[in-house]
Image 1 (tube, rainbow, N blue to C red):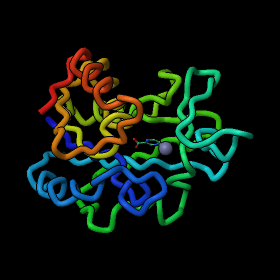
Image 2 (cartoon, rainbow, N blue to C red):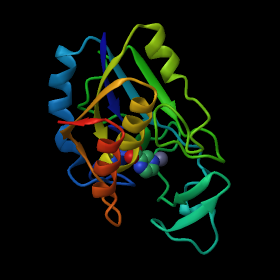
Image 3 (cartoon, helix red, strand yellow):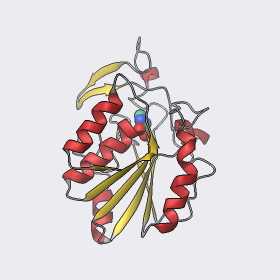
Image 4 (tube, rainbow, N blue to C red):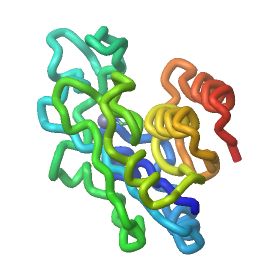
Length: 197
Ligand code: VGL
Ligand code: ZN
């Protein structure tokens, strides 16, 4: 059985949002169309407390898009985004959410970011998505959404490492592309055995 995993298609990642991904809104209708054919649909939602440690605003003298060392490794600092319950954290208004059988939220612990839908950025703390998919007998995943080089790539690589058969539909993703992060993400996904379609 297969599932379509729609990563973080939220207002803050679309043009006009706090961490806008260029053309982030242009993938919405294609994703809706893909949901019509999907056996199962899972949506993910970036979901941060207002004082989340990935926000540059929480670190004196730091600017968004800088890099700091966290106990779990290097962490990019972001503008405040996807704050729990805010309009920016809501799904894009044109995204079809009715087909979603599961909505998984991530990044809700102040001290640790979570790009991947499977593990937080320590690569250890599980979100529970693996167990959900396995107990439903899902082995094949198609990933789409935002952003290609962060949450989509981290999720795809973790899924491949866990043994899922993973395809990323690149035309239904858009990237932040910070210091060559898109090229790095593509290489890392291919190396992990992810199919880039
Ligand atoms: C994301 C940066 C910070 C993403 C989430 O969805 O790719 N990127 N939080
Ligand atoms: Zn985030």
